[in-house]
Amino acid sequence: MTQTQLNLKTAPGHQVLAAAGKQILRPGGRAATEKLFAWADFQPGETVLELAASFGYSAIALAQRYGVRVVGIEKNPDSVARARTNVAAAGLSDQVEIVEGDIFQLEQITEQFDYVLAEAILTMHSAPGKTKILAGICARLKPNGQFLSHELLVSGPNTAAIHRDLAATIRVNATPLPGDDWIAACQQAGLTVQRYHTGSMSLLNPRCIVQEEGFFTLLAIGWNMLSHPILRQRILSMRQVFNRHGSDLGYIVLCAQKPAG
Image (cartoon, rainbow, N blue to C red; front, top):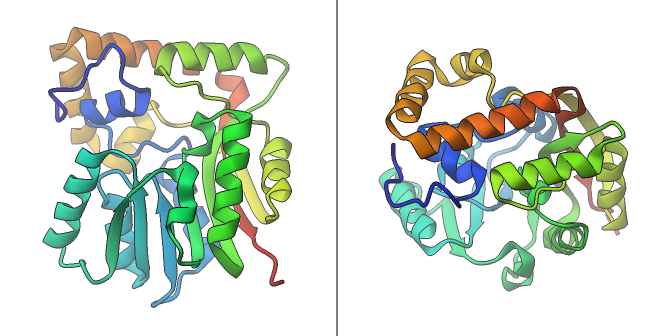
């Protein structure tokens, strides 16, 4: 387990999964993110603002793979320090910048970008929070700039019950939206959704973990769960909720554009 000082009883679900060794923490997995990147068609020299950059791994991968310049904003000071160390170790200090800051205060970044990337971020906030963040995203995009989003999707008549169960198990007031509501939220912020795709959630599916992260990652997660009872209880609780609402939970990826004017 990698985060030995983490309070596993109270930590948000994504931090618990990362502590267990889970590398991909997106509801649609790597395949959904790859679809998003294919739509974007990044070109060398373009600029990307990544929200909640964590340890900088995604920013580093984007810079290395596409030759883009990335600014990552991250609130946790320890994560910022680790991300900056990772960027320096990758030799990308001239191409990747990690800024300590709050995604609710994107105005602190004065630059405008070709893309803003947010994965599994908006789901974790209330309706007013989503509105505030999306307004900030629109302001940080250049005219014709694109917002790239990968979020949790909910469907069916039991949305309120699903929200309650998710909040109880992942310790975050998660409020995933139906597809039409995600699109409407973007449009209300002044962003026109050009493409979107939905699918089943694969976050804790063992087969998907093996396919996307490798068999040894699955073994490491299993070993950490066996070795740490609280970790095991938290992950099994999350998996139980995901399975209980499996037919009503999924993912959405979408690409939305800021108008030229």
